[in-house]
Length: 483
Image (cartoon, rainbow, N blue to C red; front, top):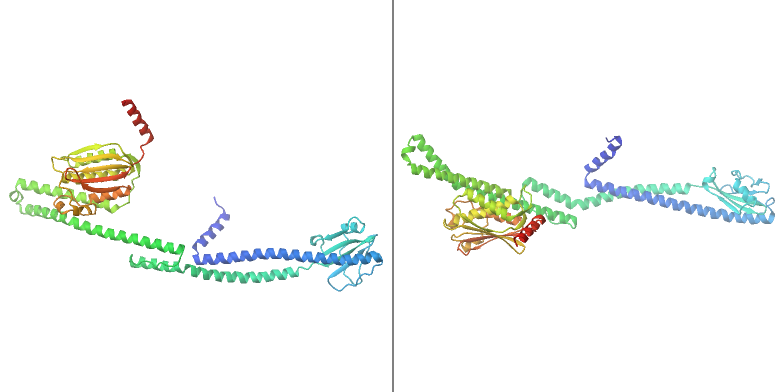
């Protein structure tokens, strides 16, 4: 469980995420300047403090040497001490017995420390007592002189540091305010293209006008963002156009079978209401009419399935897997024979492994066989061949029909396209377009040519894949056993 200590950072994070990018940039700029000023103040204060300390200590040493020279000439007990100037420097002489002499009117210094006493006794030559060693705010320098010692002291004055810190505080506040204003200005200038981009995107969302592109301005990341959005709008525009064409073509293709189906049903209903169904239609006519109705319903079912397949486009829940294309072809042939029992298919397939979606590939092969079955004469089988050719799996389906006219070759794989010679045959013109899409999705190529039997030869080239290792070893073992 997270305690109260974890709620503060989360709330701050949520607050920060709700701020605009302009506000974030302003806060970041002001914070960066504040941190820079604080660090600069700390460094400058430390350097200034050290410089003042060194200067003060040098001055104490210089004054002590002058007084020590006088004390050595006249003796520490008789040396003439300079009068107290009223502020600044303080002096004191330490006699051999530990007593002290100070100028008249000078404020009392702190008692002589033990270390300073040892200097007067000759234990060491000098001693600089730092700030934190005395409680009265003095810096005292002790120097051996004759049979005693002299001391020069100064009151520690922090006022220059305090004035410097106050000045730096004012400068820091001005810098933070200026930094916030500069950050706000820079953010407004830098984000102006994004504001215009946002306004253009809102306009497109409200007007639904995908043809209104966004002006390409700015540079670097902004320009790439605008180009990406324009590319997205172009893709949406193409998708909408494709949907509209699909709907228009579907409505056109559905009109004929629906009209025929409606007329036949209306005829049956009218005759049944009159009670003349048996007398008006002979048994053969009724059989033909019912067969026509069944064929029209089957055509509508096929068209609906193909429209669904086309409308789904590249969206598929099927996973890509390593598969033997020969198994896919055999399954498609089995389905084709179950749908059209009188179709004859001649197979010549070898095992070729590919990486793909089995259901989609089977649908493509089935469409190729169905297309060939419509054109092939009853006494001529549809020939299906599968082989490996270089790094490709080659599938060929040919028929002995009339073939495809040269003017129709370029549009064979277009949606709803049907040659003039195919107008009277069942079909929607979507089968080969589905083949084209499946082959493209698998990185292959679909082509059409004339077969040696005079009909159409539809060829599909797919990238071949390596055979799985266990199967390869088994195939090699079977080959060795056969030898």
